Amino acid sequence: MKNDNLQMNSNSVITVSEIKGILKDFRIGKKPLAKLLGWGETTIIRYIEGDIPTVEYSGKLKAIAQDPAYYYELLLKNKDNLTGIAFRKSKQAVLEKLMESKVRLIAQYMINLAHGEIGPAYVQLLLYYAQAFSLGLYEKELFAEDYIVTGADIPYPELFQSMNSHGINVLDLQQDRLKQEEIRLIQNVVNSFTWYGPSALKALLANERTVLRISRDKENNKIISKETLKSYFKEIIAMYDIHSSEEIYKYPDKKVLEIRNKM
Image (tube, rainbow, N blue to C red; front, side, top):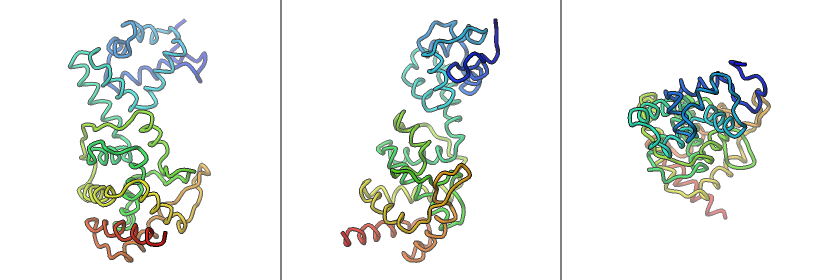
């Protein structure tokens, strides 16, 4: 019996509506998607008509539906399974989907600036400083996500998990969603902080964490609020005589030396 929701086991079996969402979001046909995944070309058609996927196939489709980065990885890996037109159309669609999230867009821009020679954890630190200096200099958030306090130096864990799972790639990027002021700030943060290795940046972060107040969000996660970051980095900006994003370098250049001299 055909069932448009495949409600048999919603926790483990992908629904028809989710499969249709994949086709729409990534602008790919039923047969091309099946070919991309190395399956029989009628497999997706049968699932949409009511056949129940195996746990393995359902899991793969669910991973695609939940993480565009995973689909992008599969698309690049198996591009020879598609026609050139189908590949280009789906590649454009998945890039648009990936960049719907502004924090991911900014992270990707940072990766491109670093020519892909940067790890997921380092991206996290750069995102933190970009957000902090945007709040301190302009009193504007760069992206909506709060700094989540975890046991590791991973302020934006959802993005980190995605990047850690699927790796770092230089992607084609339409940066028209970023204002020129934001672009300059991001560039200056990357230029200022990538002089230093992860150990130096973690020492900076550890020093800041001793004075940054921890609060709770609506989901009861421990966070460092944007208001807290704004207040603290306004003090940093005044202390290190920073008047524009072009002078952000003054902070890591002086602070890293201060920390090292105390060791």
